[in-house]
Length: 253
Image (tube, rainbow, N blue to C red; front, side):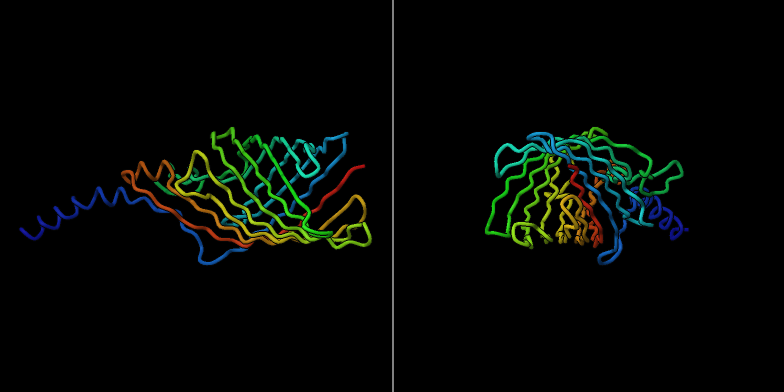
C-alpha cells in the first residue's frame, strides 16, 4: 500500500512536467535539398528601373511551395548607388509562431500555402568596380511584414566577375553571403544565413539565364504557443538546406 501510494504521488508530481513538455519542432540531420526558380523583368523609365519579380521555392517537409511576386523600382541616385522601394505579396512563408497545437493537442506547423502576406521593402545597393571585370556590391534591405509586424534587415555583400567579349558581357559568376537580421522578433542575432553561388549566361542583350546553388541555415526559436505550454521555457533549432535553383533576367527595351 505504501509503495502504491508513493508511485501515485510520483506520477502526480510528474504530471505537470509531462503536460508542459511541448515538443520542439524537429529538423532533419545534415542539409536537405530544396529547389527554387525566379524570373526578374526590368524596364527603363528615365532614371528609374521598374522591376517585376516572380519567385517560387519548394521547401521544408514534403517540399511545400513558397510563392511571391514583387513590384517596385530601382532608381540610380549615383553612378555607384541604386535605391529601391518595393511591395511584395507572398504565400507559404513560415514564421516561429506557426509552430502551434490544434484543439486535439497535436503539435505541427500551420499550413501557410494559401496564407497571403504583404511586405514593404526598401533597398540600397552601393557598388564599386575592382577592375575591368570585377564588381563588389553590398545590398542593404529593410523589410516590414504587415501580416505579423515583423521587421528585419538583410545584408548581402556580393562579388561578381564578368566574362567580357570586348565591351559586351557574355556571362557573370557571382558569390554572395546573406544575413537576415531580425529587429523585433526571434531570440538570435541572425534568423537566416546563406552562402550563394550563381552563374548567368547572357543569351542576348535582353535575356539572361543561369543556375544557382545556396547553402542556407535558418534558426527556429520559441513560438508563443510553445512558451505558454512549457511554462516559459525556450528552444533554438537550426535547419540546414542546400537550395538548387534556376533564375532568369529579362530586360525590356
